[in-house]
Length: 304
Image 1: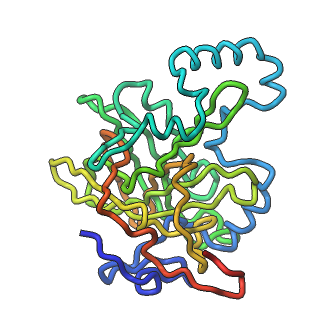
Image 2: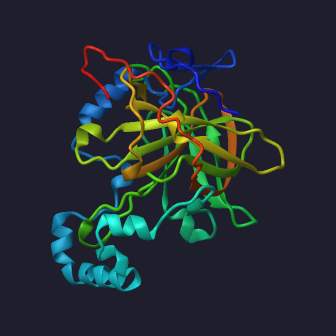
């Protein structure tokens, strides 16, 4: 059972390391702060990989008839899309105990919704990963984590593999984030290898300055032959930017969630294996906690 503890008692942002049960585990970012800050500045004009596939304005104009057909098809399938947000909210009430499956790992088409990223792809290490189907038709995130440093001038650590969803979009290039404001927990049904994985959630950001804002928590797998269903309250996710824990914390905006990622970066070289059945959201009306960590007033400004 998850217990709420002060952020300062759980997280140590000075050296980018999480201390859990007396064991030092790397935070979701394994590259040094110095390199991450440089990389963010160098790539500010280029969105992260999960923005790939969203059409540009020129592409929308060029393929205007196709986008018009997409809009008409959605209107026929869901006439409520023309109603006001209040009318849609009334027609789609969420009850206590409701589970909504957002990503179901079944079949080859379901794997196309995800993008793999490793330090080897960024020329920062030698880790490798793949997402394949198991014989039981589930998703299998597997590979080999390597902690060998490739460029000591740019990095202090190495070894990460991540799985991140592709951005959803509608006709005319409109972004289509998820509205999870009626839900309280993230639910993952998986079968792991006993290692600790990171879970990241990001909102739909309009400005490139916030592309790397994420809320993170940890996925503790127990290993063995049995599947486990893990429910993580959204209130437990802590705020980070470019993998660095922010001193000024804030809860996740659940009304515009666009990004979900799974990362392995525990500092232990060797093979890893995580089978995935589904990722969804759950509603617990008895859960009243908004954010588990302190939200201080600092010189950076007042946060409410």
